[in-house]
Every structure is written in C-alpha cells, then in structure tokens.
Length: 455
Ligand code: PHE
Image 1 (cartoon, rainbow, N blue to C red):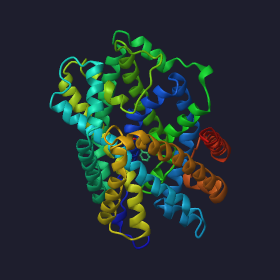
Image 2 (cartoon, rainbow, N blue to C red):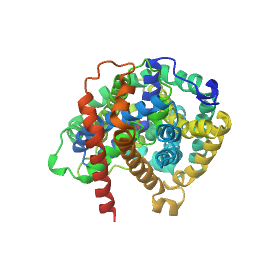
Image 3 (cartoon, protein in one colour):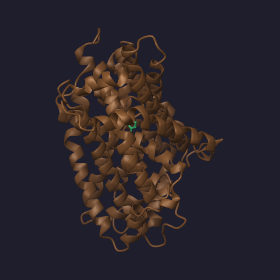
C-alpha cells in the first residue's frame, strides 16, 4: 500500500457492508430520476426490455471486471492500470474516469439539490391536499429556474458530500448506507402499490411493460447501455475504487450480482410509480407525451398526495431520496479523492475539498440551464453534460476496461483474482465470452453508430 497510511485508504467492515455501500453508489437518482426519463423518451416498454438485456449481458460483465481489477490492485483507477501495466498509456483510461467523475458529480449534484429543495417544499406544505398536474408542473418549472435557490441547494449537496468523504470510507460511507437504504426501499414499494391501484393505471402499465418491438432502433440500444453504466456506476472506475476496499475472502461474483439486482429492482419500481401515476392524470396520455428533465419531480407530488398520511410520507420520501442521492455523490467524489490520496499523496481532507470546490464551479452552468439563464437554457447545458459524460464517456470507459482486462491483463489473471473467495464460478464461460467479445463489441458498435447519427 506504499506510504499511504491505512487510515487514509480504509477498507470495508464485511462483505455485506460492501454490498450496501456499492448498492448505495449504484442506487440513486440514476434509477429513480434518470431511468423514467429514459423510458419516457425512448419508446416506453421497449426501452425497459433493452435495459434489462443491457444490465444482464453488459452491466454485470463490466461490474465484475471493475471489482476484480480494483481488488487485485487495491488502488484507485489510475493506480490500478498503472500497477498492472506500468509505464503504458493504459493509465489514461484511469485519468479519463477521474475526470468523468468530476463532471458527472457537477450536474448530478444539481438534481440532488432539487431533491433537497423538494424536501423543503414538502415540509413547508406546498404539496398539501389534492395536487393537480398544473400545480406540480408549475412548482417544478418555477423552482428549477430560480438561480439563487438552485445554487444554494447545489452548494449544500456538494458541501455535505465533501464532509462525508473527508471523514473516510469506514465511518463515512458505511454508516450512511446501512440503515437508510432498506427504509427507502420500503417507501418505494408502498408508492408502487399505491400507483398500481390508481384508477386508470392500466394505460401507464402498458406503456411501461408492453414492448412494441417494431420501435427498436440504435438510439434505444445506445441509451439503454448508457443508462446501465450510469445507473450501476460503471465505466469511470467507481466500482474499481470500491472493489479496492473488498477483502480477499469475499465473493466478487455474487457481490456484483447483488448490486446489479438491487439497483435494477429500484429502477423497475420507480417506473411502476411514475408511469401509472402520470397517465392516470386527466389530459395526459402516452400519445405525443414527451418526458422532460423534471419528470420525477412533476409526478411524485401527485402520487404522494394520494397516500394516506401523505404529508409525513412525502417528507420521509424526499429525505430518503436525498440520502440515496448522497450515497451516489459520495461515490462520485471518492474516485478523484482516492486518486489524489494514493497517487499524489494529498491529505484526504484537502483532496475532498479541492475536488468538491471544482465540481461546484463546474455545476453552475448546469444549475442555471433550466430556465435560470436563458442562453444556458437554450444551449441545454445540463442535458448535453449528461449526454457527453453520463452516456458517451462512461461507455468509452467501459469499452477500454473490457479490452484492458481481456487483452492486456488477461482473462486468466482475472479469473485467479475472482477465484479468491469464490471456488465455483458458475457463469464463468459466459462471463469470459462477454468480456472478450460481446461487451466490447456491442459497446463500440453502438458508439460508432451514435457518432455517425450525430454528425
Ligand atoms: N449510479 C449512480 C446513480 O444511479 C450515479 C453514478 C454514476 C455514481 C457513475 C457513480 C458513478 O445514481
């Protein structure tokens, strides 16, 4: 571990602690806010279908690859590539991941800030009583366009994240995740049940779950794969960094499986809440409907107001959503911080504050691009940031991680690492095939296709 002290680096308490922390990174706004938008803009159920395939065939494959590289090297992404293949350009993939993390953190924190704003609104009773679509839509548009409010929220989110990260892995990340994630899950299930029992829920359910295969195209595949990477925190070294804290006794395969499963389950349930509620609203139907960036914030108040004890429920829900978002921002900040601590020998606190400040500055244009400043709004800064960093860069990163593992480090070395803590690897032949051929080939084909379309 070089000259970096144990305290600055840290490790997980147990396998279950790792699963909670990694699921905490994965489960967040990606499944609850971003997934429904992707479904809503990419043809409904056909996207859900493509997404499930993407998680099973590509997401799981890359997840196991990242955990394996991380645990083997016990390093941040830059250090990891460097220690397996010293003095080669491979470490550029690590640098790319570190940079991508800072950019994603910047706009992701804006949305997390919206959740904070909504917690405040719910507490002060903005959504008391029957909430109409008009009211909900107006509240969101008004809030997202208020520069002072969104910037204050952004500042608080990044401040909290920086605080937790400067405390270190064990006390910081573990303690947050263990208690609150199961509670969030319980609340999501109750909302999903309520949404399914709404009058008129059928339209939303068939939009969400009855795929029209004629609609399938390259765009849908691209966004499905991109969403899988984003939602599972893959392609920039988050899972590599988290994997570096896993003990050699733990089973990487089942850990990867659990994280993929729990994240997808939450995304699936989020859709069950959003679409039936949305299309059970008078005047809104799937024909011609276009999901916007605030979809979750427009729809949640509608369903929360229909739950018995809605006020308390709403407050609790936004509180937990905020925690889920924070466990993800924490993991985003952890990658660049671990890089500075391991590679540049910075103190953890100084590294966290530096990157936190940088991502706050980078987040300002995104924060002001939803009605706050008209030219930033016209440019669609936040949507573009998400497209470039949340889809393209993560896909590029994941592609190189596959190629690195399969053709530079070598599958047999990876399998040795996987075998520690896991004697029988049931899906071994499938994983080997996927990491060598299917995942890199699928990702690069889709990327080339998309760049072709964009030109
Ligand atoms: N997976 C997180 C979410 O769904 C976002 C994230 C992306 C976190 C990439 C880390 C790395 O909310």
